[in-house]
Image 1 (cartoon, rainbow, N blue to C red):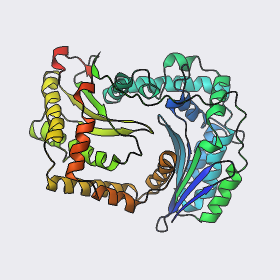
Image 2: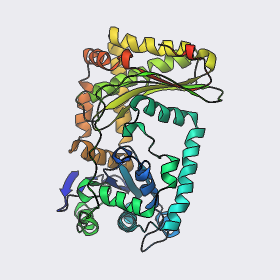
Image 3: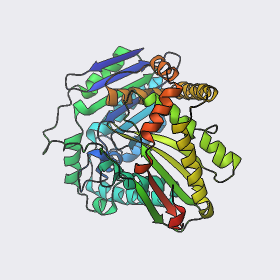
Image 4: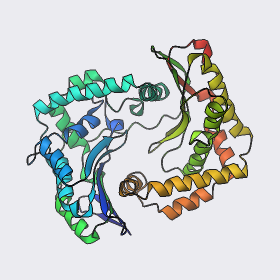
Length: 418
């Protein structure tokens, strides 16, 4: 059962009851992320997310942690380029206190100066942790190599120099500018009484007025019309060389997004994918190799990642390039296509069996497309993907003139060619 309610102040509520489940997941999704930060605010979205857990007018940080544990549930948050989510998952009988806890930190966090200074150090450590993980770090570097100074090319965690200089009034102004009722989606999935949940959410969010912010949100920088591509070497003393190859992708709501998912799965989206079978299973040149799609409201990327030893970098890049070109020139076999469709549908259905997965999908559908997309509709669209559509999309996306190759490690520049 799916239901959508829009409160008078613009808050959107999307609900799906799962009668066979004994848990409920609820999330407050704000349409703000690193993409909406202007120069000097890099990392503010992520910092605000952290600070929401550091104490409210009614609860200390430790009380927030103890209360969610006492419910036998979990509560967390995350920030992306275009959204920030605060969520909880509990047994159905814990829904009311969990929602009270979640809304308290969302509406009533204090942002105490002492806690702000402490959290700066925590996030600086988080940045260092990312740089110490080559797989995470190459993806961060690759985004910047592809998009340059575009906000999506910048780290969600922010820059240390901006974080060190962050003041409480800067953070409050940022929150007042971007946290607004009309930019908020509340998603609930699992076992609950629909009308009682709506009444609770009306109580917690119905009187939330649009803040009289010091400034309106800045205009969003649109997706670049052209990506120049290039080869970027980032020298670091590592045992392996970490490589990302990036091509143009599709926006989240693009009509061909299901074709793109099938294409990506064939290329490098699992253990039966062409890249995994050739590079790892057949040749033993890498332990980790995969491709993935990154979709945003108005653009996207398709990225291949691989880690290998320095002497094999050139050969691995050539294999990846050959498999990509093959998708443009040779039709996918019907057997491979049908196997991939079954794989995708299975992954989709399994991912939506849990309340968190269902809640997240509800929120993303509403945020990015303004409507609910049923599982039946998604399966139908996957089934409609044809061999011809895959080849046509491959030719549109795989433009080697705009290919961006990012390399992290110790490698001779002559080894990085396509």
